[in-house]
Image (spheres, rainbow, N blue to C red):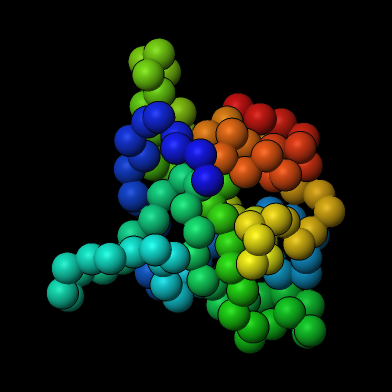
Length: 132
């Protein structure tokens, strides 16, 4: 996994409901845990852009609902600052459902994807229609 080169603010915490931006059948998911998080006692695990989380599907097709899946955050509302000085924020918090090899399970991604995500996960970047 490639480093991002920027410090991403961790704006999405556990329990947050996110929109699913792919065509796997999930529409709304809720963050259950953060992959690779080693925190402090009683501290809420948080995640940001290009982080992996275990999510529970809340709304979607009947075969996807109430399942635990892995997902990568591709958009977040909290703005990030790039080394060039550009500040970037999106309208919503969105994820893409991935498998154990961190490759997307769907075949298309709706909406823009942050460049940091496309660099870290090339398969997600190749499926994206817009990379910002």
